Amino acid sequence: MSQALLDIRGLETAYGAVQVLFGVDMEVHAGEIVAIIGPNGAGKSTVIKSVIGLAPARAGTITFNGRDITREAPHHIPALGIGYVPQGRIVFARMTVEDNLEMGAFLIKDNAKRRQAVEAVFAQFPRLHERRSQLAGSLSGGEQQMLAIGRALMLDPKLVILDEPSLGLSPKYVDLIFEQLVGLKKQGRTLLMVEQNAARALELSDRAYALELGRNRFTGKGAELLANPDVRRMYLGGYGVRTGSAG
Amino acid sequence: MPARQIAFGLALVALAALGPLVGSQYHQAFLLQLFMMVALAQSWNLISGMTGYVSFGHAAFFGVGAYAGTLFIQSGFPWWLAILNGSLIALALSVPLGFLTLRLRGAYFAVAMLGLNEVARIVATLWVSLTNGGSGITLQPAILPPLTVNYYLMLALAIVATIIVARVYHSRFGLELRAIREDEGAAEMIGVNTTRGKLTAFVLSALIPGAAGTVNVMYTSYINPSSAFDPSLNIQMIVMAMFGGSGTVWGPVLGASIVMGLREMLWAQYPALHLMFLGAMLLAVVLFLPGGIISLFTRKKVVRPEVMSTGDGERRG
Image (cartoon, rainbow over all chains, first blue to last red):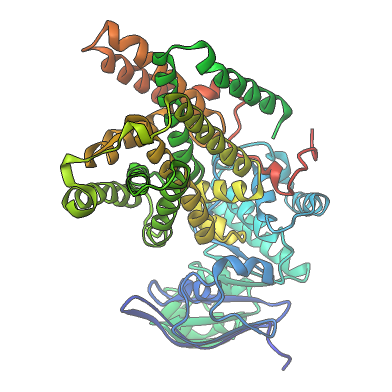
């Protein structure tokens, strides 16, 4: 197997005295969509917070693109080629859509290049283009999520990490956001996402990791996990167990 | 910085520089205090207006600087060295303090700074061997420069403070600070070193108050703990900056001028009621003009990343 783009080995993370992760292993290969599923408190979000430096690892290693990023500070992460879409659609509410995107390319000092990146995101998300001079805080939840994704793409990241991209969105927007994630994969981007909607996440992803209480529990192709009765029972609330259909 | 604003600033400075030539002692004394408030409101603006970390204890830097300067003058050093010393001591205090307090967000930071000012006041009161305690220190007027010199010194501090704010406002660094103000987490995610940004702004914001404290003692020739660490000074600089428009270049200048001017006009006529008038005005501004008086003159825009590449704001029409 080729070297993983993101390689997590024996990750242990704690918030103060409360240990959340107890040796999690994970790999993300170039071009994949990888999902992390698990019940509340399993440590899903903590894994990605450790990757981007918001919750520094206590033990273990995190390697990205051949480089050890275990102790990297959060503000160094964007320049390394990791885009992050935080949970809860954190945008600069009092800035316009266009300015939010420009802020996403804060590290690019060349105006022309930054404009190019903005136009590329607009081409991909025509809705954002329509709303470009609107304040981000006035957008609908789904549009804000789109904007957060667009902002994460501004530096043309190798890996996009999404924390609960569908959380709190209307069903219509959940469909739209998931479609866009597939679109990103088709462009050759690599995605790692935490998702509470485990069924949708497994359908969409190439591979998935199911966590339980801070440890790996199941690992495999998305479709395999979706067909696994144990996974269904534990993570999907019995979703489709009787009918055997993935819905 | 736009040429029109530079011209406006130069005109203001020229006008202020004429003060001692045309004004009476009373006018000079009033303007000196106005300059002091501009310098303090601008300094507060640097950390609190730009990053949203509201400090309720900036008088601590003013007071610590004042004591440092006073002790230097008392020991026979020239006043210019005392001013420098006041500034440097405030700076030296701000670095460890910033490390400690800037982790705190929102109200916690504000309260920590308020506490600092009180602690400083108590230390100054109890450390009698150094500060002469509550009796304070009186400097011999003979070794202090005349009013006109103090006038120009305070004017210089107001100018320097405003220039620092303007330089920061129109720089990439200023954009970092505004990103922190809008959303610190998001700022970090786009690659802003938020710790460094906050600390730099904090340290810059301590410099001028330290110097202003010393010049103020050179003007009044007296210092005691409650004049140096006057809690109402904290409130005044916040009120003036917000009244004019915090987070902007000219807001604190405007706010200090209007509030000081009105107060001067009103207190003689309505000794008991003038504070009520001012309070009502402040309420009205906060309620109806949250961006301050300055927002009447500027187009409604909060942040534009026009300064991402320094010096080139011409990228779109």
